[in-house]
Length: 284
Image (cartoon, rainbow, N blue to C red; front, side):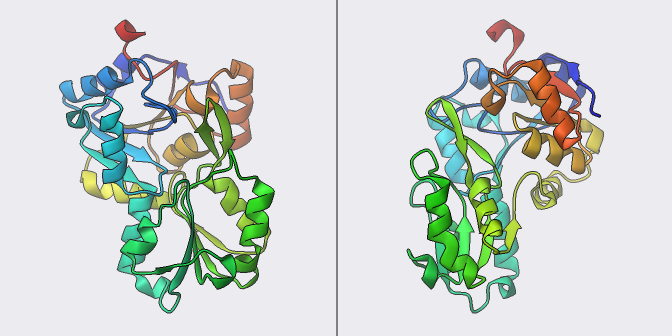
């Protein structure tokens, strides 16, 4: 059984760590805008000389996400790099095109018509699952498209054993002030239909290996991961051997301590710290 983590302030983490791997949605922002206090808190990390990497389960590339964050009021100088699961997927698939050689027709399930990964890999985009050799699940519109509709739509691709890559493993997403099924929930449907899914992003090791390779020889105990998802951020950090801080915002917003404890028990993890939110004390 897991234990409840140590309650801490962001100032405590600044004093104890050199590198911050910070989730985007649920920590810095929701689907509407920046959380109060988050932009100055992020800037404070850089002012303190920290390495700051935004680590996000987004199927879109990091540069795209960085631009969106800046548009919400975050300073570009407040983070060193934006790494996404979409970046990791491209890195892996572009270096080993044998994984998709001969599989040229790609169906992308996304949140806004995004076919970036397919385009970068030189695949032909198709709109019908029965035509697909490859399926990329990078986003979700489950706030308006039911999971049963997704199931029926994807069935022909799963039945023909089309390769499937989930480049956003998040099971839940923030949508319109509530929580809706994320791309990971759609990928689970594909598995239920008998299709095989390759998962790329938190909590899986590839995104941590990719990020660590850019950090050089920094010791694990000098790196801290901050996120709102126990299943993705905390499990991923734990499996990567990294300290972690769970914030009580995002998908955990409004949940009681007992409910959070039950979720920690469910996934058998204990984050190093529990933060009320990602902000400095004087900004709360």
